[in-house]
Length: 315
Image 1: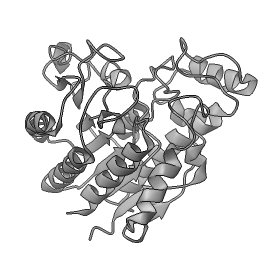
Image 2: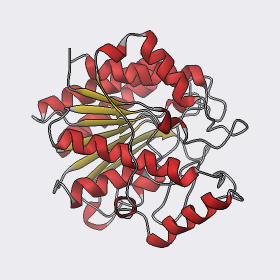
Image 3: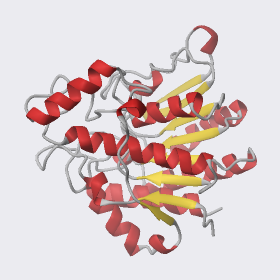
């Protein structure tokens, strides 16, 4: 049993939502937590509580003008932070700040040896840009974590692996020219799904050419196709020899999600978690941070994310 897996739990994380009528609703955290307890996982991990990020921490990735915009619109509680997907509801600034703060706490816990690996359920908001919200994502905790690993902890080789149905465009294009960031993204083909990006020929730019791997999958993709693609993805990550691995494990690639078209099962997510846990161990550090990401069917959220936790515990 891996007693050094930290899971971050607390009602403050459940406050990141956009209301009951929105796909990113308020019940996602509870769906995961109920299944997490039902499977007895609470007894097998170290539990930590959420924390707020400072503005300086958010500014590791986001512009000060955008942070102030979110704060202002969150106080007003009117309109959208983007073009219609991400409502500026009251309190969303504090909720988004909690997501970032909790992810940074997990990063620090891993880097300082308090845990080897970690899982944060409400996180992985991979669409937000440096100066804009997008696709239900206010602050990009994935990108903030990458910046922190580079600027605060001095790491030079970081891998970001994304198996959410949607391409992680906010991360990909922010680090498209950074050769030190290995990115592997398996997602529904952008010809069929938001954000319409992440094509196979996009593999990095300039000195970073060849350090990114996009794997578009067909809309009706099942486990057999995804598992075959994963072999290529895993080999790509292994060749990069990262000092830290981030996994965005969105549950919206499972069959039955209301806004995507893929047909994966939770077993795929569990397999990826197992393989990345083994890979991190083979690399000699074990550092793996998993972030819940998307997912808009509550049952799928529960089964996919608990499969990830179980996969991280299996080694």
